[in-house]
Image (cartoon, rainbow, N blue to C red; front, top):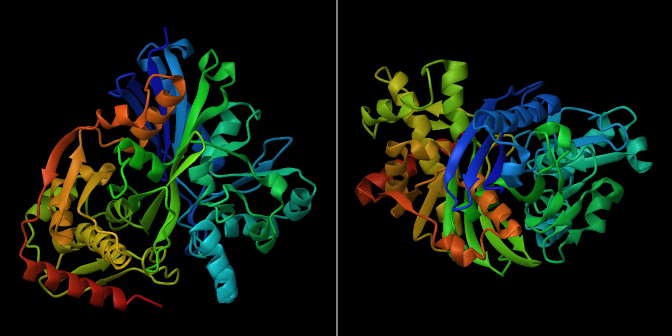
Length: 492
């Protein structure tokens, strides 16, 4: 009898396959990093075949290492880096260009060229999003305008668009399923989150044929079955959710006002607003948290572009640490007020600034400054950016009273202590920090009938460690004022 749920967690720098039991416990996993490509300043791409192969190999590896077959798996759930954009040929399956990653800023000029406030307001009213290169719509437009012959093929109905979830589904089902879920659709800047449909006016604005777009499903639904050759048998695909929404679900933030922040490549703070799509007046995003049985739950979200990616930069470009986890011990042995501030605007600044032209800077260096202070400043920047988001939410009337955290950086105790200090709230880390994968496993289990309701899922969440504020109010305010000064230096 099938007894495991398989989560595909396709991230910005790596792909993971994680097996969960029907009690929601992590059983086994496999992970594989894949290359990032930076063809020009502000451009970020993935090779679609490398991305797909990393997913396929991790799934096959986790099954093989645990001597499992397709018949042992109740269902697959897919969670993914959002907004990353792929376009492929409907008939051959050949991708027309590399995947344009969510961090990519090549369409910032296009966004700047739309200077009509009425259009920007219409986009926000319909999609909950700010006009920005971050989202998929301008990336699709760029592909159609810059890949030879793409516009003509798209107009002839020969090209398909997908975010990573849709692309993986297409590959897993051998081209039989071209679908997405409501959470990923809500990040394209083409989906009306109130009417729950692709918006014709927005498609016209960005010159995108509707025939390219996938069918939009609930987060738990029948998405298709895998081609039997991949895993020596068919496995049903029963769930999809963008990575941040999946993390919210895995953190059991089912009640209005509950919030989580995922500290991965970027950092994403999301607060459940129930059945109300609240409009931010402080440059936060309104988005779909999840959709089950046709019922929509909404959220307010703040997006930080560089979190763990900043630590990767220290490792890979500056080469001042051997591995990301080294940063914790170094920060512990460095005074908090060292005067150095790293603003990680490597691909612009996200919420609440939304400045695509800002670039990174390290300020406050003195003769006493060195490797340790730069590493500490990189970690501190994650907490300072979280404080920026908390302040924006407060201005929108949303009180962040406590925060559940997850993602790779959530294993760093020093960082979580400093986040608690800067936000002046309790920070809670769950037993399972891979809550993105857990969330989509929960959704898979709901569709498979393993779990009866979100109420049952709430009982499964466990806190592993809590972090409470220790810093003085004066020191917190002093540090944050210096951070704001550093940010002001990079804004365009």
